[in-house]
Length: 228
Image (cartoon, rainbow, N blue to C red):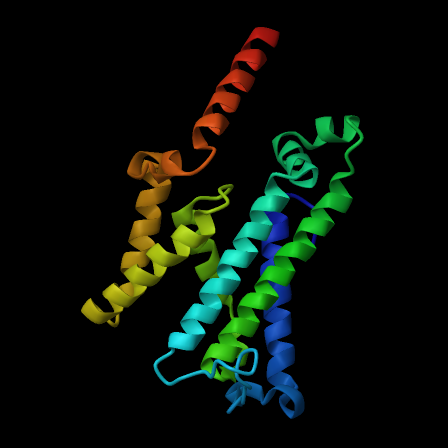
């Protein structure tokens, strides 16, 4: 999947997901096929906290996991490994000249992202006691892209805020217009793309380190202009 440009990589990822979905659908002896696996029984968390019908335990459990994984992601972003990823994103050729191996680091960050996605799938199964091939469907990947576009690509907290906004919009619009809620989600996406997310919201300026990042970006822009 790492061979090619960003668009090719994106389409290849979708293709692999569709192949896995069909494989899961055919392996009914293991996955339950189109019916999935239901009635998943779980022991109490740490032997004390049982999953209740109201979802309170599952909510707190998922929230704790989210905080822990966000903290780990923040440490990764601010580590030398994370800084090397930023260098690769800005200019892969210059990063190679500095002795950074882009392929190895991209493979590593893809592996980390796959682990995070696996944790999300595990939480979904644990809190709903059900899993089906629908988790590998195309619309699931499209929802993740919508979350990233709404929250902001390249921001550590963009996925969290994007997921919250997307969930609120989906639940609210599905109640108002159950048949056409995807139309309104698509309209919101088009507005964000055309108008620009920075013009619609300025919540990134309130995040820790936002002022430092802006100052660093302005300094780099000034240096680039002077070098020209």
